[in-house]
Length: 235
Image (cartoon, rainbow, N blue to C red; front, top):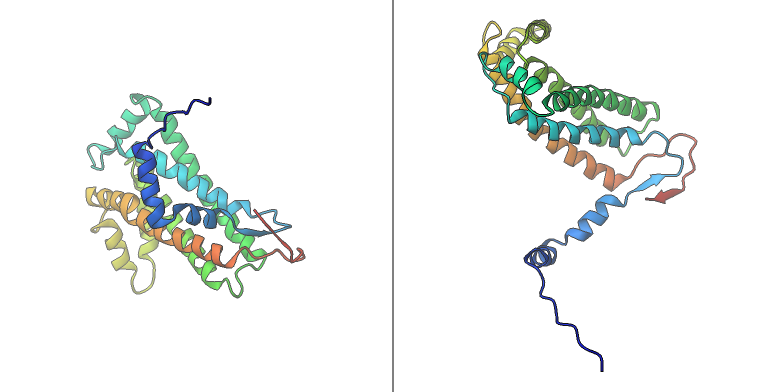
């Protein structure tokens, strides 16, 4: 006689997953996102994914840095020193954040160059290209606003030069410069404004554009490079 095993009751986590799956069909959505057709001869399509990877690194390290950073003229530089010297692995987190920011911009530029050289911006992918250009601008905005946050001499004078360049724009330059600085000169208002843009405005804008970009790529697929076979493989 076979002894029957006692029936195991589903855990609360499993019940929650079943409830969500019945109403949102998460598995189908994940399957649709992960299974995208790519050209057989794709060799440089990793640049977009590499940029997305560095974005993830930026988010994680940025959140950790924000736990200790104080966006004020009196506390900004001191909080950076505290992160570098007192927080466990703070120096490593800040270094990773700094280097991944540079690598994110570099990979994004290379990705845009690849798309341009391979003419992947043509019909029907014009909107994907426009959104990609917007993402590049937002990425550069992250670099510009984040450079001031340590509030040291190098950051101060680099931002001064950057805002003066913006002020040289015809017609709207003076208004744009005052808008960026929060006044006629760099001050604590500028620091607070840059911090708010860096941690709130730009992340929300980036999330919106990334969502649209990935949706368009999923719907249209990746453009085959010139000379590649028309056959596509499903990954």
